[in-house]
Length: 307
Image (cartoon, rainbow, N blue to C red; front, side, top):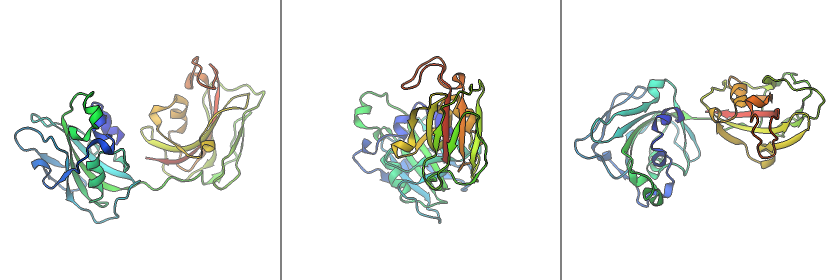
């Protein structure tokens, strides 16, 4: 979803509006006269009625699908095509059929009500039409944000991402970084990272696979679910740990430090890797909370899911 929705930077409040954005249930049925044609598995054709765009959000099930039902909490794999319904050109804003890369939508309360309800009416293999007007925006944001054109989404549900792993799974490789120690306790337990060393860190990025997973390789544009611990080279000072917080972290890979972007792309899901990240690929001369300037950072990372 993020690749297509990057085109829609002007309307994040509409797509990701809180569920409380509209007190009324969205309308179902003809979706304000919008017509969708074309076969599933191909980019749809959408015909818009004449006159002004709809001002009320709605959805319509174009094809219900025959696969598994969609459940709250699913990370749906979809082919998504988006139109800007302005009553003029009604131009397409993006389509995963053009990028040839399906998108992922988390089915949760951050979605507008129209999509939360619509997804309950389709199964895997189905097609959903959703019209998102400005009534999808929470009232307090309607007063401060400029009005956006009505958006039309045609969503083909391909399937759902499998649940994230609890920890890395696979074969230990015996790889290591000189001066860094990683102990693998096995099962779902957190690894132990030790960075107290007199060894001089490399001025280049160093990535070693501790446990090699068997999942698909991470793509640079994906969102990752990971467990990790981060320490500073030479001091064994820990500055962050998702393990200690008790929950994995989730983030788009292209939104984190360069050392992670370069070090994790291409690594199979299910892997445990240790990274030594020089300052120029970390935070450089800029000190962060608990991280002095010009620090070499060391992370042990379990890649639990990528979508």
